[in-house]
Figure (cartoon, rainbow, N blue to C red):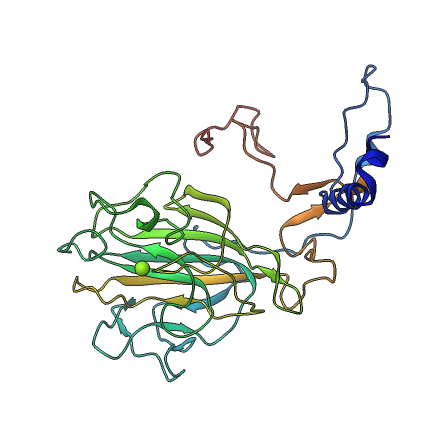
Length: 326
Ligand code: MG
């Protein structure tokens, strides 16, 4: 009745709204009558997730990771400007930014789409400078061109160093203010663990779905499935440019502060090479399980408190389990 009053345009808008509604259905809780019912109806046995051997600690690459830097060489990297061999410095098992004039950014030879990335860095203990001129570098989660083109996760010494908050450490540069500031002081190793979901474009270059970044900074969540508005620009409002795959890039910033160091850089590809025609991604490879009835859940259940460990002695193990309110 209401639709008929709106006329054809109203019908079209209503239909459009229905079509654009999220496809995931939400199951309402059925009335519980005791514990009757068959628990096997909700068990899923396959496909079985592949076995991945975790690293010895959270810095070490799991068995299915591509190691981009392990302290030995720059075989996985090239100069951004001309794809020639990377000219940054490998010294004492770490990678040091080469801030000499004309060197500039480096990027991976490989191209990526969606991934999990781990990277560690350290500022020299005698770091000088202020604001954006203090340990500035960055991890471009997709390098879409020369120079600083792409999507930058900022690196900066933000331990007692005031700057604009959408440009401090842990920011998606000029777009995403970090939720908190877990910076360590210069001289201490720090880390990013990132989940990058690349933007999806139509064939004509228009945006279908934006990019999303989730970032843990020194193990602390600073970007929670943050939706980007486009590439990270120094000047002006962000916008998207179509790309399919891109290198990961490290920034040699032009400020005069001492160069920073990197170590333990590795990446795990999620749904390599494939975006399904409907814009969704391979359900097993991107860390999301399909469940019956169209429901979805993340592969790991959120930690809500102490739990009993399998094979344990029945006492509640709480030493390394914690939850933070967001
Ligand atoms: Mg930077």
